[in-house]
Image (cartoon, rainbow, N blue to C red; front, side, top):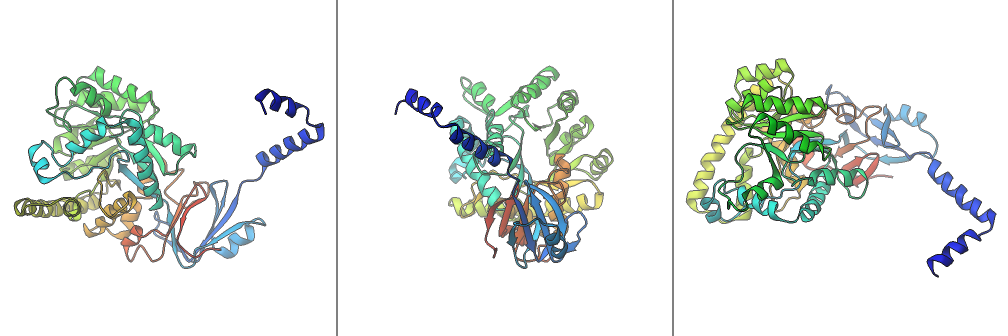
Length: 459
């Protein structure tokens, strides 16, 4: 039937049939939101550390409507409610990775390649990513985002290495329901002055760099870089601070971002760069490897968050190397020395952060292909290592739930199982306060009131 004839057929339908079709559509549009009751043996409130046992959560329209003992919540629930019984499992709020790179999946190159290049562990694959099709990167990011979600990470903050607009495009696709993934706070291109990719072919250097970064060489360029990211409706500004960036340039970045109520996350590893970020009023310090006790005190007084990223703690990079390439005895020995140095440094850092009273969260900084693990499994493994560095399990959980929500400025939406917040829930079989590695074995995931994964008994 031609398009013309189909239209003519439609308009000749009896009035009663047309009215029936319209009424059915109106009823569907006005149907009440789905109501779900989730029951579990225990519910952990990370902010207080309290346990509710047994527990029930009533969900309506993707939001939490009530939390309490099953006897009370079931009484308040409307008829026909869908019940999900998780048995003796422990419910927690959806997990938050506050520092990740969903559009990077760095594959470790052979040892000879590592030794022949500046920053040889990272730069070769970063360059391969930059010169690949943006569409391919976004599709890979969609897969990694789904894997994060399936492991319980219902919110992430993507801090750069996404091409010009890869993370904002992925965020929008997830929000529109076109692909599955966590809520994303996207930063667009990273602002920087130097580093990452060096010694490029001069004929191609500018075009390559501009796919991934926005350069900051003076205050005016700093302001323009922030506005360039605003064009893509970013949620956060990420700036990599080296010792060469001036306080005036950093202040210009912060001022422009804050004028639009956008937070600034500052990659700062050295004592000098950390001080620049503090003095400029950045909202969070990422990594902060060489932070001093005095700087931690300044951060506490100014309300600046410290975002811990134990990416290489616990011999993690060496384990990835062992699963990826053949290492010579000399290279393996250098890795062992580096691992021990990292262990001592990070355990000291964690203890100083805890003692200082500074506000802190934790991010995985995950951008590596970890053979044998999904992206979500690799991400979760980063956070459990904080326990090995001396952080109590409850503080680890806070760092990736309530504290992270506070740092992101999303404390009214996520981070707790609380009335009015998004129905983002995860469940584990055991007690994560007794064994923090339970968060590496998430068995139930719900986002927006919709079940993403359920490996537990339900009815």
